[in-house]
Length: 162
Image (cartoon, rainbow, N blue to C red; front, top):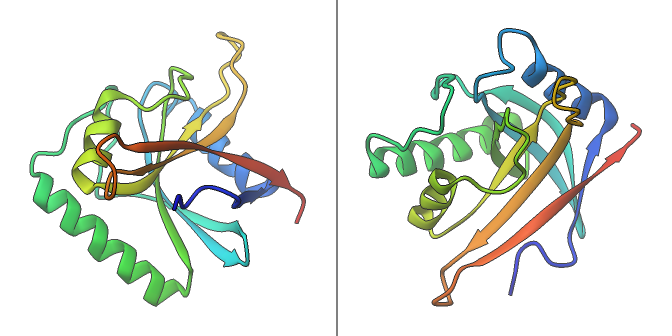
């Protein structure tokens, strides 16, 4: 059964604004930035409560495939467990920006998710007035554990007031 079905994704307006603003800042607007996003699970919905910049992955202008797939996977699992224990959060997601405004998964994003066999990747779309681009946050749930063809579902985040 899918992890994204019948589950609502909520993000407070303040956190949404901070994430998209950080991605839109002058020094960042042409670079892909990486984040860890944390949420608490409440019955059938998750509420984003904080985020941090992922300093393990540096900013780049293009998507970069991991040097070592195994090291990437081990680092992700280690960090997720560490954050869950230290911060007391239920859900940990990786996120990165797409300065181009494309909400779809990039080919490298798909390869990473395919290697992990299941997971979630959040894409932060920064505001860009020159391109008439609105800020947005989109998630992609990926699961290839039980089927030949992967299940890829869009996670739509609802902005809420705190």
